Structure formats: C-alpha cells, structure tokens
Image 1 (cartoon, helix red, strand yellow):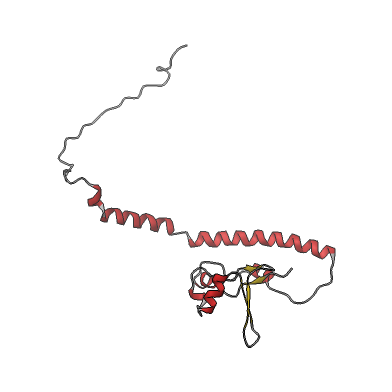
Image 2 (cartoon, rainbow, N blue to C red):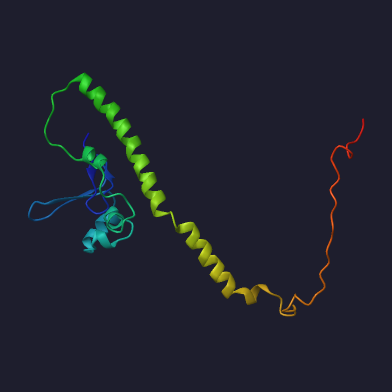
Length: 165
C-alpha cells in the first residue's frame, strides 16, 4: 500500500482517495481533497496559504530540520522480505515516533515561551486603556481622603479553643 503526499498541503493521500492531475509534460500532481486541487488551479502558492505545511515550515511554526524526517522519505528500491528486518523496522518506527513527538513538544514549548507574559502585558495595557468603562461615573476619584480604619486581630492558641467531647 503506497501512501502519497498531497502536492499542495503535504498531507497523506491514501489509496482510493484524492485527485490526480497529470500535466502535458507528464508531471503528476496528487491532491488529498478538492480544496487543494482548487487552490492549485487558482495558481496559489502553498508557501503563502496559511494552512499548508509549506507555510508553517517557512514561518517557523513547524520543525524543518530533524533527523527523524529522513525515515519518512520515499524509497523506490525493492527489498527482499526478511521477517527479522520487518520486526526491527516496526520497532524502530515506534521509537522514532516517540523521539519526533518529544522534539515537536520542545519546539512548541520554545515557540510559546514568551507568549504568556506577552498576553498578560497586552491585557494590562487594554485594561488601563478601557478603565473609564469599568469605573462608575459618580464614583469619587480620590480615595486617599476617606478615613482608614485599623483593625487589630488577636490569634489565640488553638489548644485553648478546642471543644471537649
């Protein structure tokens, strides 16, 4: 079973799915869905369309350089069937997926590192700008002139306050 890649968005095209377009010079373009095919016919550049893998890689949102991508490349050389080799390959695929997942997580964490502080700063700035909407129009501006009351609280030991049964 051969899994192809969509020419436009780089997603997987499974057998029996998608559209295949053959140009006059015998170049084959495979598309996963009509959305990709229509964008191709409109001569849109995948690097400029935000939802494609090409855009995400170009703008640093996805990993571009990683050794785990080497295992995903298409190989046209037939191999003689060997049960041990197949077993080892399947085990290696699982470990490679774990490694890739960990690396993608760290890449995402590094991208989002300063985002929380930036969002807090923007929220604080917006709050300061829109403060007039929060305050009541009849409220006094200066609260420093109002009387302040100090309350002294005494803490008694917890042994004295226990209830006897």
